[in-house]
Amino acid sequence: MLIIPAIDILDGKVVRLLEGDYDSSTVYSNSPMNFVEKFVESGFNRLHIVDLSGAKEQKPLIMNLIKEIKSFFSVSIQSGGGVRTVDDALRLVENGVDYIVAGSISVKNKDIFEKITAEVGADSIISASDSRDGMIAVDGWQSTSAIKLEDQIRYCLSLGINSFLVTDIARDGSLQGTNRPLYKKLLVDFPGIFLIASGGVKDKLDLQQLKEVNVPAVVVGKAFYENRITLEEMKNAG
Image (cartoon, rainbow, N blue to C red; front, top):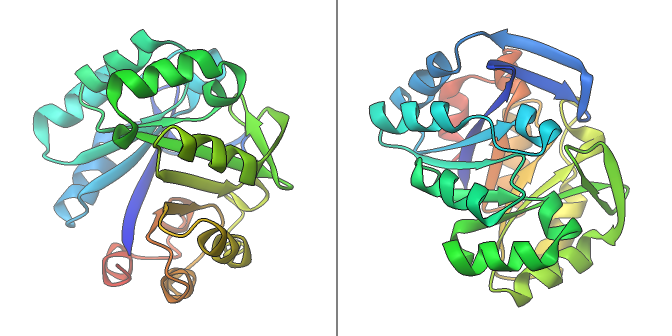
C-alpha cells in the first residue's frame, strides 16, 4: 500500500481543515518546504499537495512552491486546487506536477475537463471524488452537487481515468477513523481502480485495516501533524 503524506497549503502556510471548513483551519508551519524535506528524507516518494487557496479562489496559486520542491527533491507530486482551464493544468505539469488532482471542474465543466484529460493524458489525472453523504462535493467542499459518487467514478472511467482520490468529507480532519466499508464496496464495484483513501486516518491501526481490505494507497495528513502517527509507522504500513 502506497502511503502519501499530505501537505495542505493555505495562504502559504501548512494547515489542516476540519471537514473542509476554511474557518476551522489549524496552522502547523509557515514553511511547507520543512515538511517536504522531512517526508522525502524519510523515504516517501509521492506527496499530496493541496492548494486550498487555489480551490477557494478558483485558480492555482502554488506554482512557485511546486517549482521549488522539484528543484531540490526527486519526488512525485499529486496536486490540485483551483484548476479551471486547460492552461491551468498545463502550467501545473510544466512546473513539476506529476498527477493533477481534478475535482470541481469534472463536475461543473465537463467539456474543459475532457480537454484537460486529452492534453495531459488520462494516466496523469486523479479524480478527486470527494463525497459528502454519497454525493460529490465541489468548490473546495463548499458546495455539494447532485452527482452520486459511483456515477462520477463511472464517468471518469469512461475517459480512461483509473486513479480516484476518494475522501469522506465527514471524516476529513476528524481523526475518527476511515470509512473502510465505503472503500471496500468501491473496490468490489470497480475492480482494478487505483483507489486512494483519504479522510479520518487517526493512527497506524487505520492504515493496517485499510491494507487488509486491499486499498492501494492512502493519504495521511492530520494524524501525522497531531503526532498520532510517526513517520516510521507510516513507512512500515506501506
